Length: 77
Image (cartoon, rainbow, N blue to C red; front, side, top):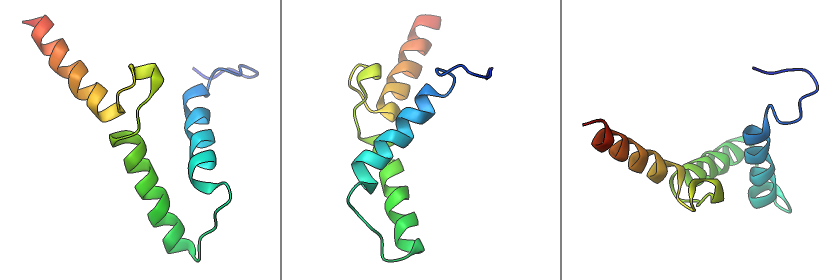
């Protein structure tokens, strides 16, 4: 669980927000709130479905999860 003063507690969440800021928000602006919401939802979908993550063997999270579930089912049998 979360403990006060532990800088590693939210490392994954902080990494996501850092990437979102760097890849989507730096240097850009949105015309209005609906446009911002749309662009952020597109980025989240891209981040989970297409963007490769080094911690997952350079697979997208959705692909990694599917591969993991398939492998787990084969090993359990």
